[in-house]
Image (tube, rainbow, N blue to C red; front, side, top):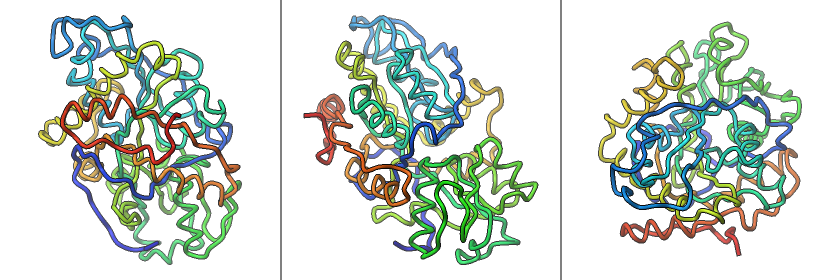
Length: 379
């Protein structure tokens, strides 16, 4: 695995080929900076029948509850909700959007029956699937790749070898970035205890909301984090030492999936299919309108959190994220092996974690290439 290089991928819609992917796995109990969900009120995403392709079509559910994070790596959800592109496909079925700050709380909502569909990282997707022994969740689509960078204090760290002996933050133990960084450390021949984070590099598990202040105060020397946290650190004087896309053969790795409650999927496949039509069309719109899509995502972030991202943060962050319908399923096993190697996970059985039937139906109808579940689909 290369340890140098920097690659930027223009944010666009793409059905991409599977490549080695960081999917971070750890026990739900060990992953948790959980928070309560916030129900958002978005007039565009809550429209009823009367506008768009789904108007007049009566689906089997009057409402669908969709969860997402207020992160740029959830661009499909942000733009799809803000522009009404998902609601347009749902006809008379209303969207009840819910914003989450962490994967465990979204998984709990899905497993507890208060959420139907979620945009979420691969690590909590796998955690939820393994914990329920495959009975509760399915990954039904990809959403985004990339958008993860190693940002450091350039006064303390000038080369990758300088990381030895330094304090580097990741969002939480066993999460996607944490496992990727632990694997990178291992590839360097260095040693770190995965539980404590102590070793040749001090891995400091730090909430993304806290990382910028910790960086400015000097309590961490850098961070392996997703956008927009990475660009926030750069705006505070940090320097990008490594873009994680440079570590992957096809320069792609999934950071966001679309998952569904199996109960909802079985009861309302027509609604799930309509949502997937909306996500595919949203990714197309992002590709065709990158600047408008960036502004749309920022408007949704402002609506949810009360403050848009500064241009100095969103402008460099946005191009590093690739929206994709393909979940890059073949790479799931690779990251699972990384987590097992780091002793953060017992060897899991991932057979059945994907159900791409409806996605491939939507893609085929749109004249697009179908995607693979890499043998990990439901039988």
